[in-house]
Amino acid sequence: MPVNIAMDGPVGAGKSTIADEVAKRLGILHLDTGAMYRALGVAALDRGLDVNDEEAVTNLCQTIHMDVTHEQGGQHTLVDGEDLTSRLRTEQASMAASKVATYPGVRAEMVRSQQRLARSHAMLVDGRDIGTRVLPKATLKIFITASPEVRAKRRFLQLKESGKLGDTTFEQVLSDLLARDDQDMHRETDPLRRAEDAVLVDTSEMDFEASVEAILALAKERMA
Image 1 (cartoon, helix red, strand yellow):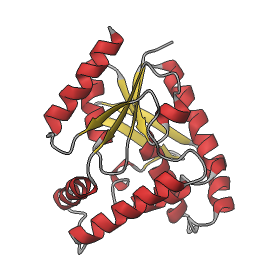
Image 2 (image 1 turned 90 degrees about the horizontal axis):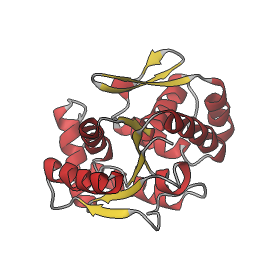
Image 3 (image 1 turned 60 degrees about the horizontal axis):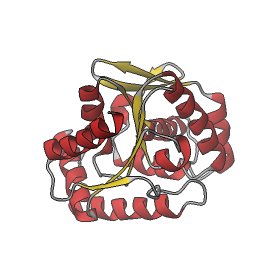
């Protein structure tokens, strides 16, 4: 079986950017499962669907063709051949993803796809139910987090730097983040939680490089 690293954590913990760099330095692929849920949310909105309509969203998930490719610039997530990658980091995509991810039929479909990908390649997989549901026998499980205020500040700066902030205030970003946390942790199907055998990494006092180095050290120790 290929080496698989499972990384879970709440929104704004820096999972995707940290996982990208760790995977690159380890010479393995990085699968951002959150991007898959975001892509489904964006696809639903593009088709005029109400993301609160569980049946309609589940049917969409079962009928579209979602593909993940890994190119030099990182992961690209496509729906029916359309690359949605550039549209997946907005607050609208984030909230839509959090809603569609609560639906059992959607999660079952996504988990099957993620497990299939992980069986074929050594990869670092990040999300919210990787260590508990997608890869319960992963080589290493990590739960990465930071305080809500730190995570909100990071998200606020990310939106500002990407030109997607608009009129959104820090207080709104923090409020949305707390709402997302609550939804992710209390959904009935595969809620966000730390696997019993996952190593906790709190990056509240760490910069990006320190966070990467901390996880690299854990990965190299376990892989050795």
